[in-house]
Length: 123
Length: 162
Image (tube, rainbow over all chains, first blue to last red; front, side, top):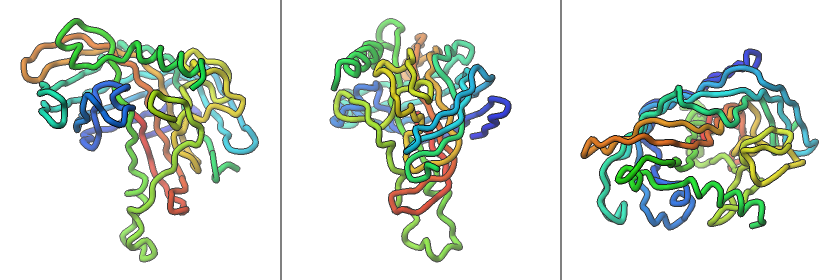
């Protein structure tokens, strides 16, 4: 993770992360029973890059949260893989899955970077 | 769960299909599940710090106290949007006069990055080799800095919410 607030730039870059779960869908992830199963995934690479300065915002609620933020835009490049699975990890046997994102397709609905303090470290 | 929050979750769930169903049929929209990767506890543990002996793996970062109603219980985060809590297309739960803290952990001071992105790519069944275009929607964040963990000690670390 690298951040340069003056330039409005940041990068989140992860590689070869295997200690992640793939729950297949968000509802299945949120359901504590995970009816579709819950298996180990492999995040081969993830790179999110923030760029530009669209708007600068400073905010404090005076009690629990304050920060100085830059709204901008971002792109994502990600390659992930889930191995084939079988019961009891999934209700039925499933083939493996791989997804490779096209960074050029990214639509940035919202992006921001900043510096903040909250909770007991609010000051 | 109030109406605004119900609408928000309903809207999101309309777009949440399982990937494996999709690969059997036509391309569509899917979404990955959320998770929190934390390196802070490991980074904070120092081999030469005698005071840490036996304690370095016992602490966790504490969750953001704000909750958003989810289908199976409260979720500790704000949807993405401006930090001043003003209305945002990415947050159907409305405005937040107390501010919209993007961090998913509390007792934190440091850098934060947040995105709400829609993107596409190629999904592949690794057994058959069949491919199909996929569209994903992600809320990904990082937090890097100081935090006070569940053991009430201050640590330095980095977290990613994917």
